[in-house]
Figure 1 (cartoon, rainbow, N blue to C red):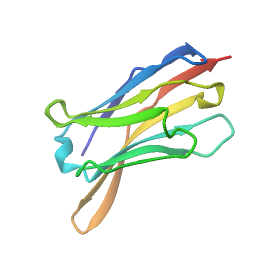
Figure 2: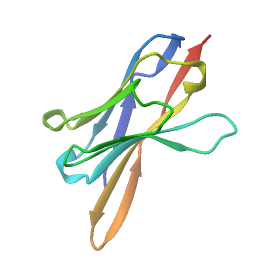
Figure 3: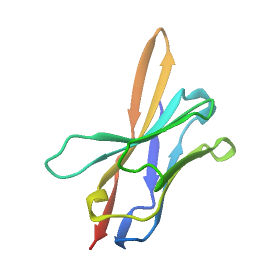
Figure 4: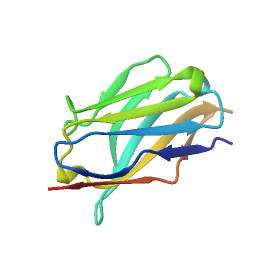
Length: 119
């Protein structure tokens, strides 16, 4: 089992910055891909950013050039640096771990952290 714990959410004004952290209970080098997803009220959960074990990153178009995902294998932690925040970034942000093992893929989720951007 993999446990993921997010932190770093909060309230910020538009144009501000926040850094989210996701601490894993296992070595993240074992996790094929880790990502940040978000879910706003009344909307579906969507992918924000993804980083593979090889360091490849992928971003939603809406956050490109504003958000940066990174990983620190020594700390078993993945980060999401969010700059130039907009009110539409308001959502609960979830950390995800995507692992291949036992001939199947498994997904693990954190409990979520609220990000609120005021205008």
